[in-house]
Image (cartoon, rainbow, N blue to C red; front, side, top):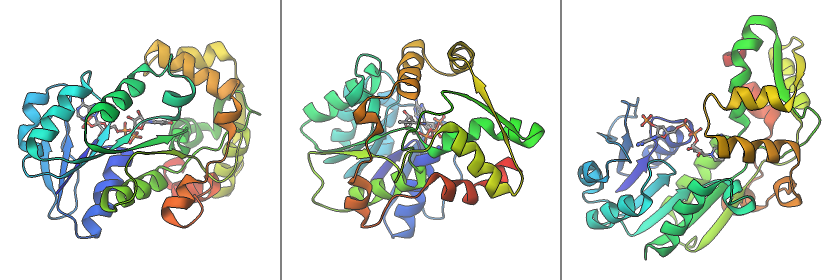
Length: 271
Ligand SMILES: NC(=O)c1ccc[n+]([C@@H]2O[C@H](COP(=O)([O-])OP(=O)(O)OC[C@H]3O[C@@H](n4cnc5c(N)ncnc54)[C@H](OP(=O)(O)O)[C@@H]3O)[C@@H](O)[C@H]2O)c1
């Protein structure tokens, strides 16, 4: 049985759907009630309350873990008591390139490596779906604001992350691997906004934000340290953060999907 945490979320929800479609027995864990495919067991639990995870891990052998809650060791202990022997962690590129800013994912990686479980770590860069932040202003006024409009980064489709995760959860041969997950090509914020316009069939205006404007906006939903790390990646990416990784193609046997492809599939959110 495979336990999927973050099952009510963007990536976790798609992991659950892929595993269920492949005939796996799945337990979906989240605090909110999630809409799940038929046959998937739902356990509502908080990763910050590992004692409450006992039921979720009963009879499990594999786990998809995302970075949530303050005590990764306690989550892993509860998983091992339930029978888990393999963990796939959804970490973040920043844990490798800027561990001083991304301390939380880095701490989860350390705990997973030390756990004695068979582990695989997924390190995605920025998601294509971060563009949902523009949905309201595109719907209301055909405009989208972002900082560093001409800095390119190879953002990744969350559907590709989910497909890599589902593959690694089901297959042997990925133990002890760290997969860097990126899209197929760098795109700039200005190009992403143009791709949304093309998907809608109507132009969308790009409005360049200052670093300070972006910082103030991001502080509303991210801790300060992560905001500083994210602004550094968006504005002054290192070579490692610009690099196109071969890992999606290595695992899936096909290239990762482009931002333009994501925009077409998700155009309804911007109409
Ligand atoms: N966006 C990016 O550019 C980016 C880049 C690199 C890495 N990441 C990482 O990727 C992860 C997944 O992204 P996403 O888009 O799928 O996120 P998302 O849609 O916000 O989903 C997050 C999930 O985590 C669950 N969760 C949060 N705190 C929890 C807790 N204490 N106990 C149990 N469940 C908890 C939420 O469920 P409930 O609220 O129902 O509990 C939700 O299902 C993020 O956590 C982020 O760290 C994101």
